[in-house]
Length: 88
Image (cartoon, rainbow, N blue to C red; front, side, top):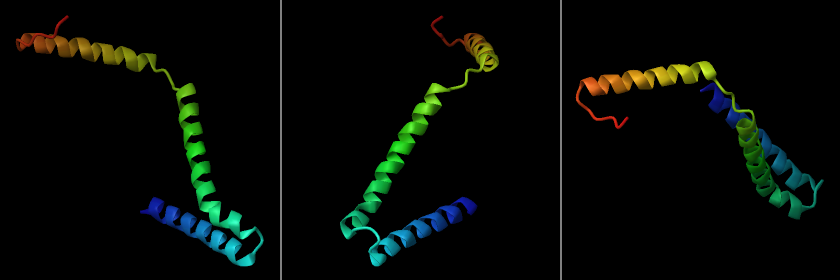
């Protein structure tokens, strides 16, 4: 619930700033009307950047990989005991 409230307050603040820009004529109205579109584009670029950074610095976990391989071997042995053909 806290995250929802934070998001709601943030959106409300952004909406208030946008309405303020429309009413105050600080920015030409043509630009101010397109501000939500610019914000969506910026948000999309930020999302793509964060996915790219996350993929570049994806952590490798050799210990977890060993544990996973042990689990796979154990599962194959269990299935062989039950009469299931696991292929290898």
